[in-house]
Each structure stands twice: as structure tokens, then as C-alpha cells.
Length: 168
Image 1 (cartoon, rainbow, N blue to C red):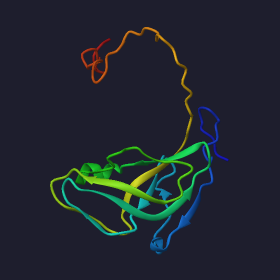
Image 2 (cartoon, one colour):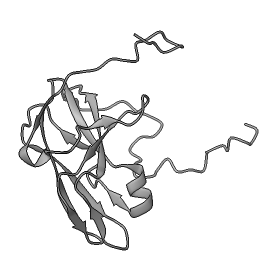
Image 3 (cartoon, rainbow, N blue to C red):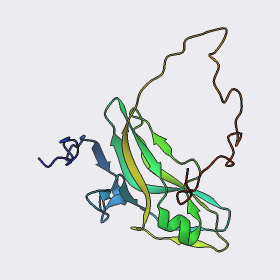
């Protein structure tokens, strides 16, 4: 098995995910990695849809999955669709939970200025299998102090960013 040159960690590890092909999936290809270094698998539309500017639609993929416990599938936008056409996944990353067994659908939104045609077989999103760590809540009366404190929503600003070409 190949390994990463800096760590000797295996780079060909996979996790089996059961996939059921629904009748309207016929003739399509299963999600696949476009390159050896791709983090996400491209998933295709199993229906034709016209997205008017501002419109949203849950696009069918014709697939349902059984994700192993301890994992999720994240649904992420394709950068080319976002950049060229303004097509996005509004809840990115969308989450497919390990106990969901319905059809995998991809919510797309058209943020562009003109209608966009999604055709059956078009690559519409990326699927990333990711491990899940569950939290447990510890109730406390006080939290520790940090330099940031309660500042949020842009409070860290950009004023202290040093450009790469400037001496530090």
C-alpha cells in the first residue's frame, strides 16, 4: 500500500459504504473521486431541473446509502458551478447522518443572474465521508477567560494581518 512520504501513513484507506441504486438511477455512475488526491466524490443528478435565479431545489441522485456508525457524508458545492454559474449548496456542508436511509438529495440554489439547467447525469456536488465525534455537555457557572472574550461576527478583524511579502 502506498504511503505519504513525510509520515509513512497509508494513503489508500477506504471505508465501505452500502449504496442502493433506486430505479431512476439507471444509466448513471456511482459517485467517484475525479483524481487520486480528491477529498470529495462527484455525485450526479438523476433528474432534469431548471433553476431560476434565486430558486432552490432538492435534486434527486437516485441513491440511498447506509453510512457506517461514527461517520457522516458531507454534501459540498462544486467550485466550478459556484464560480461560473452561481450554483451553491445553501446548507453547505449538508450532512447525511449514518441512520438516514432515504434518497440522497442535493439542495441547490441559483445565486446567479440567469436560469441554470441541471441535466440528468450532470455532476452537481461533492460527497465527503467524514468521521463524527460526539460532544457531551458539562454544565458550569463560568467559562475561562480568553483574549477574544465574547467578540464574534468579525470582531477579530483584518487589521493585524501581515502580508507575506512584508517583513515581520
